[in-house]
Image (cartoon, rainbow, N blue to C red):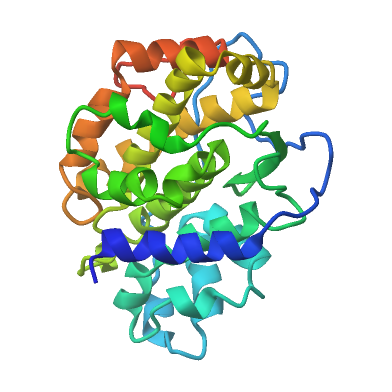
Length: 320
């Protein structure tokens, strides 16, 4: 089955099975690190960054890898190379769905399966009933030192409404799944944010172990990140142009505005880190989609919504 079509089907089933639940905290909760955005939106420029060490030696883990020790291997692998992955794996260690995503046949297949596994376990953490009440408020695992809960959503409108703004075929496969599909296309801001965040975990999950990847299991990781950012920016544009009341509500939510800014900078950060591995971790279309994400209309809506200027030069992970 085509990876671009098999991954979202699993996601959709799991998301729908979670249902609505109570939220861990009524007020937004931040876990921050140096350079993070505060709720008060400090005026000074900052850059998104997170800890990773993709050159850390894994030879001992590769030599000892087996079907019986895949979870300790996963945690040790990311402890060395990408602490956010380690911390998520620890938080989700008891989740029943891991076995559906992780390939334990050999280490290379295991590394390749991390795009799907970490993507889906991010959904499991973000959308857990203790943190997410569907279309009301949600949560986002950002990195090892920053997780956000109590993100207000105020419902929204079907994400299929952004389709008229997509004038090319660069994201056509994902458009068919997430926008043209009758059920998926009806998801609101909740779905847009959830898929972007999962994509922004799946991409670094394989970027830091790219030398072990030989198949196609992670071959659209960069496309997923770029496309889901496209959806978010276009969703904001449609909100402003066609849903004035909703636009006013979400624009008055500082934590949601901060999240949008972080995700924009974070996408730039990991697309740059993964750029040398285009072909293995993404198609050339990912960079073409990214170019459209930096169109004047998209940058204008981002800056209006967040209240911050962003850099469009070689430091796209930074505010101006």
